[in-house]
Image (cartoon, rainbow, N blue to C red):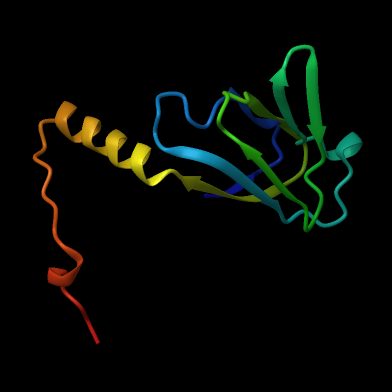
Length: 124
C-alpha cells in the first residue's frame, strides 16, 4: 500500500492489521519524507504494544519500521500537517491467508476453484 497524507490534519485512527485472522503476520512501513520534523509536521506513528508502553516513531526519510502481528499491536498515525508519504507491505502466513480467503468465499457464496500451477495459462 502506498499512502499519501495530504497534510490537512489527516490521520489514521488506532487499529490492528490482523483483526480477524486475515493472514497478515508482519507489517513493514518505509518512509519517504525528506526534511521531516515531527514537532512541526506531525504525522508520527504510535504503536501500543502493551500498556503502559507507547512507542512513538518519526516518519523520517529512508526509515524502515517492522513489527510482528502475533499479538494485536494497535497503532495509529497522528495528524499530519504536511504531505506525508509511506509504503506499507504486509507479509502473510500462507496457511492462515488461505483459510481466511476460504471463509470469505464461503460467506459470499462463491465456490472455491483451484487451478494447479502446471495448468495455469502462460504468456511469453
